[in-house]
Amino acid sequence: MTSRTTLSRPSATGLALGLAALSLLVTALLANPKLSLAALIAILFAVVAFANLRTAVVIAVGAAPFTNIIGSWLGFGAGPVGGVLRDVAVLVLVLFWAAGIVRNRRAIPFSVSRLLLAGYVGLVCVLAVLSEDRLTALYGTRNLTFYSILMFLGADLFSGDEQKERVTRALLLALTALSILAIAEVITNGAALTKIGFDLSYSGQGLSRQATVDTFLGRRRATAGVGNALDYGWLAMFGFLLAVAWRPSRWPDACLRWTGLATTALGAALSLTRSAWLGIAGGLLAMAVLAGARRAIVALALCGALVGGVLILFPEAVLLDRLLTRDVSSQTTTSQRLAIYDYARRFAVRNPLGVGIGTQGSASRNIADPRRFTLDSYYLQLLGEGGVLLLAAYLAAIAALGLELRARARVGSPAGRALATGAIGIIAAVLLANATSGSMDSRIISIEFWFLMGVALAPGAEGMPVEATVA
Image (cartoon, rainbow, N blue to C red; front, side, top):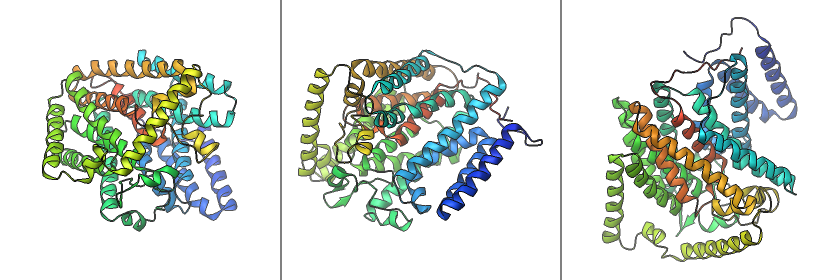
């Protein structure tokens, strides 16, 4: 059964949507002519969501890494507008999904991992209410939990092999296109982004300390317009592990898989993001050990051989300088991180219950002090904001999710097993990379991660797609 809504007769929901769309367009035209195009895009997206919710979800998640570029195209520059686009799109999707659940009077399936995630979200909300700085806490709650709703949505809407293949294909296509842009960016030293109208001042260089990192030894690090090289490196990591696990049955999909493998691997290398490199190694190892994926062993061996070959043939290579922390830039940033880690550890000991949601992550930098350093460790961020309880709640939810996916990776249909295997690799990569990076605080990363987890949890060939209509 498809998730298509009949529009043959007017409905209360349809009338409300029409009036809201008309109001939005009129308001935009009166406020600022530039807003009219943004309003029109929002209306078209709402129409797509009204007609076919699954298609709208795939479009929104696939387009999420490009929203900064889209914001530039609309004439608003990069940065805040891209974030607003993502937030509004997800909010529209969640409202349509909730309306479908209410209309069809059906229950949302729950499992241990989903219950623990709901508990983690609830704990963040409680701690946010108790925080002194309510505005920072609100933004911090959004960064930590808002996009986790996509796991519930993905698990509910995308059951069946056809839907799992569709999501894998769409996301790998998006991440491959993003990586091609990242490679072109490095080759042209940023000119590839300016040619499509992107403001380079936002692509990492405008973010205080990132200025010394996103231009490495005179060359630009790959960012693909996402915001900084760290976040792009994580997206390339997701795409590479997803491509390794995928088992396409059609030759066009096989071509996409091999293209994705090559471009995301090269993109991750050119991002010079060490946490992503660590995550790829750990993700491949987890896929091999926990899910029995032989191709992950082969990929891990090839990565090791590649690094070894470069070390022997090109001992002065830039990538090795970065990997082995031999250059001044890497040594400086590593020393800064170690000093911040030591301070954060002592701070957590003095404040075992944390000091408030949003105070240690990007929310604090964006709301309170733009010069503030973030901790570059998601674990230390959670520890500082909500203490041991918040960190334990997060780890419990992720661990339960990994155990549930491990079971799915060993039974069921090929498409379901492949996606679950890739999700296991991504979880392992995130758990490792979280130790030296705060990129999970990024909303772009959160969108891709939680949605992929949800689709991987959805029933496979044995599950029946659910009705997801709004009338």
